[in-house]
Each structure stands twice: as C-alpha cells, then as structure tokens.
Length: 110
Figure 1: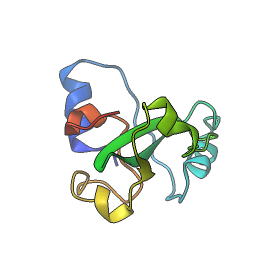
Figure 2 (figure 1 turned 120 degrees about the horizontal axis):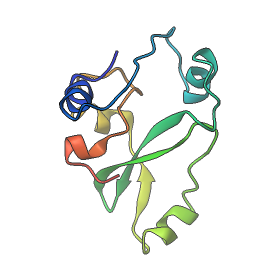
Figure 3 (figure 1 turned 135 degrees about the horizontal axis):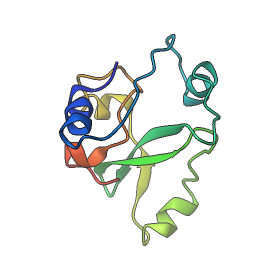
Figure 4 (figure 1 turned 90 degrees about the vertical axis):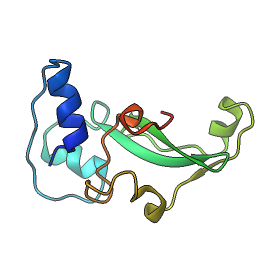
C-alpha cells in the first residue's frame, strides 16, 4: 500500500506514478523480483542513526550498506543501522520495512 503522505505529495505535485501491487515480500531483492524490476533499478530504504538521529538512506536493492566506509563519507559521524522499533513512530502508517524513500516528507535527513 502506498503511504498516504507519499500519495498526497505525488498527487499535489502532479508527479506521474504507478502503484504496483505485489505479494508480501521480506526483502527489497524479493520485491524487485516479484515486480519484475531489476534489483539495480529497485530502490530500497535503509533506516540509519547518524550521530543518534534517525536518518534514511536510499539505494539499489542489490547494494549493501558499508558501515565502515559510510561514516568516512559523513565526515566521521557515528553511523549505525536503526532498530526496527526506532523507525516505527515516524512510519506508523507503513508496514514494517516498507518506508517510502522520501524522508524529507517526514523531516528526516536522506
């Protein structure tokens, strides 16, 4: 299901989009496969904590977060994966793991 906030944003900005329904999946790679979108073209949302603040990273489903290199790219910031429970509050209207890749709609750094 499309996030209501994202749905409103896309409609308000007259952005063309198509919502694809698919069977429930566990990983972004699985979703890319069942929707027949290549895993290098399917974006996944990864929730992080950067210096203790919830942030979002959007990347191709085929990629993995490198928690060794990422802090260096962030100027030495402490970067760690967020616990699923930490990202539930801002995305209470979304299924677990199905956060839209538009953190700016939630006042979140992307």
